[in-house]
Amino acid sequence: MLFWGYLSTRYEYDKKKAMNVAEGEFGRRSWKNVIGNGLIPTFMAATGNFHGYLGAVSTALADTLAAEIGVLSHTQPRLITNPSKVVPHGTDGGITLLGTAVGIIGASLIGILAYILFQNLYYTTVAIVSGFVGCMSDSVLGALLERNGYITGDVVNMCATFIGACAGIFVAQGMQIY
Image 1 (cartoon, rainbow, N blue to C red):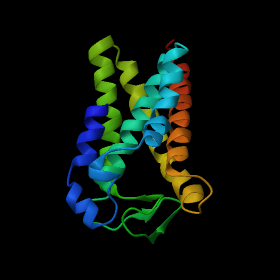
Image 2: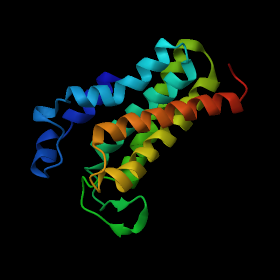
Image 3: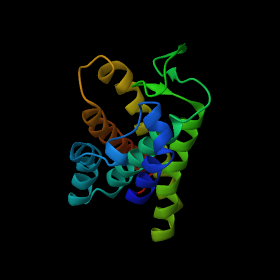
C-alpha cells in the first residue's frame, strides 16, 4: 500500500505543485497524515479484526489514489454533496470520474492482494466494497466538515478509515464470513 501511495503522490508532482494541490514537500506525507491513515488499520490488526483491517487499508489506498490522480483529471471536479456545483481541482469534497475510478482500482488492488495471499474471493469483495464506501465517505466528510474548517484532512482520513473498517466488518458479516 505504501508503495502505491508513494508512487501516486510523486506522479506528476511538478504539475500538481504548479496547480497548488501537491501533497507536502516533494510529495512527502507528514506524520499527521501517516497517523490519520494508519491508526485505524493498526488498531484493527492489533485487535485481530481482519475484515476491519482490510476495510481500513483499502479505504486509505483508494482515497490516496483517488485524490492524487483525480486532481489531474481534465474535467472539473463536482462537489460530492451537490453534484451540480463545479469546484476547483483540490477542493475538499470535489470528485471526478477519473478519481472515483482510480479509487475503485486502489481498493481492488488491496482485494487482489488479499486474494493472492488467502485464496478467498470474499476478501476481494470486502476490500472493494469497503474501500469504495470509505473513499466516498472521505469526500463527504471533506465537503461537509473539512471545507468549512471544522476538522483537518488528517482527521477526515482517520474518520474515513474508521468508516471503511466498519464497512469491512459489515460486509463480511453480511456475507457470513468470519
